[in-house]
Image (tube, rainbow, N blue to C red):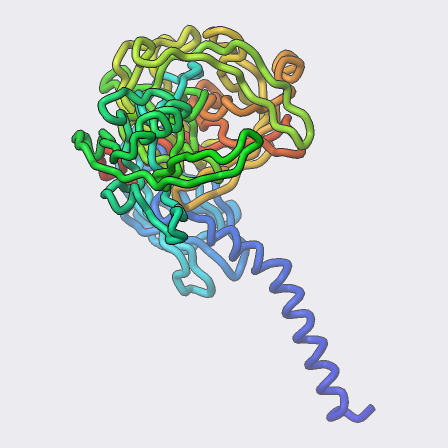
Length: 448
């Protein structure tokens, strides 16, 4: 074949080899680099090792704290000298700040700010808690149209000024304590054909609103029957049983659950007068493939209140304790692990499966995701403890928030179960929860 005719096949082959090489060497590194956070926090004494392959490299500034070391094979990039390197070890000796740049063919593609600070210390939880988005009444979560006897559609509650998030605590001054009370009171009090006075709580203030129920008729086995509707979707403010993740005895703040409290259909439940209460676990519905189990718990309400919920977030509930708590395994606070310190391998969780006794159970952290934003599902865990597997089948509802301990530090909390494998589930990083707590209370700190 003449040389000119060989050029096209050769060019195609070279392009093919280039893309194969790019797929093998470059794309995995691009994905890894994309997971690097803009801000990385480490505690003095922790160690982080990172490696890149050509055409990627690290760039280190000459002025940097002790403990930030660059390597090119056996050659060390000494402090005081700036330059490129293929690997770095970050092992800060004291608090300080620095940065490193990740470069592609000498062009900066990502800058990572380094902050070396002592990580927070908290007491791990494990306590079974009942979650009340309000102590009494029912929470308004939506409106729907009601067709009256004249065939027209009405929104009686909405038109009266009732909003999503309002807490209805009384009707005609009669207390409304439970979800099932609502329909009973409406039907009995509206039978006279007069409007109803609904007492609601909104933004901490109580007000009374006049609502005109819409009358409807329906054929039943006993004949035609009249009933009255307000055009409201409501939910019980008792969101169920969960687990406390940590608390800080110095300021009384706590975090729990590791995920947002939601109602039926995954609708947000507005936080009105949130409380956590001490719960007693009376039984376990065993988890099976395709059928997540659950803890069965009881709590009384006001007399069992142990804390005030001040925020319902994507990473859990946060608030302030009303009483002193303790953990029998950790009488003093322990350090929170940075996200980059969490590793695959053995760990343990603390939770209650009977009564109020906190117990320790072995697990394995199977996978750790390097996240660069505050997100849940930062790790995959598997229950390995034979006792917990026998008693619950693995991870069950109500276990959300159970603290995960590794190497004597709190590294995260249980959040979700795999529906098709109840022995496995997700966990959220403890550092992310502490950062979310800081956001709730307006604390400005960099995070990894």
